[in-house]
Image (tube, rainbow, N blue to C red; front, side, top):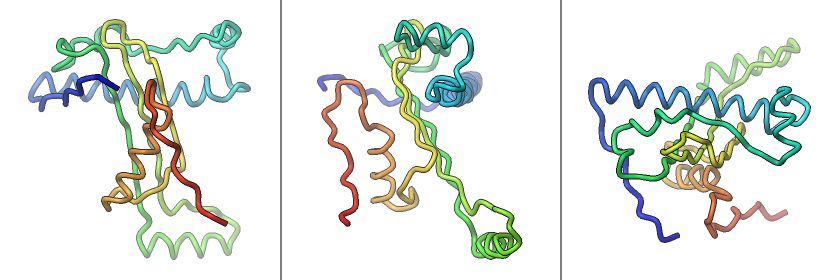
Length: 166
């Protein structure tokens, strides 16, 4: 896309704490967007008004520009990924619980990626998937997950992932 990609520097001490705080804030804002913007029936009263004007207005705040390495960049790509895989014991519990009519999750696979304007802190783009595919412990699975997270990234010409043939 003609942009220069700069990796965030390794942070220590107060810088590392700031990175952790903004990562947690990104996760919280992303979950709010998923809950209150993506699902029309759940929209907050102030976001209903915004939606009528076709405005997407969510922010991490202008302080995000203080992140290590941010002074050399215009945008930051935040990525959140959580995977929990069910052990054999967990899967046995899931089977036994199902016999009793109780549902037990065997694992969790969720992720979201967001593009942040480092001057304003505004969230410009967000992609979220609560049922992502690909085992990130394997190279192919990690590649698949990154492809899913970056689908429809602004300005990209990345093709959609192929669906299974029936």
